Image (cartoon, rainbow, N blue to C red):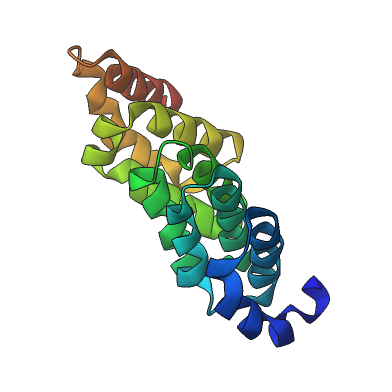
Length: 167
């Protein structure tokens, strides 16, 4: 089905909100293979409340791999339901690496994100290091000062890790 996804995607997209979870997961795989143009519809599936549907929606967005799809993934890392955030993090790293690095830098440069989501920030930082992200140095410089946030041990750990990696 994914081989002819472009031609069958429009009728699938029309029926997607009415499909059962199993059928919706298959439909999301097809829409992800169809490429650009279905990002918003796919991202809307997270609101269904079903974890499987939401995970498949994140995978489909990663398959599309456009900056618009990446934007939806990042929004779900930040503000998505707690059950969706791990799937969104994983989807971020399934994007083309330059785009994944750019979105990771974007998140880690935002102090409010790191302060409100220190555990996620620590995982993103670790994953960027493991992926040999060459452009991480300026981000590490910005995060290093957070090591003095003693009132928030999780944030302080992110800052300490950034300082350690910077050296």
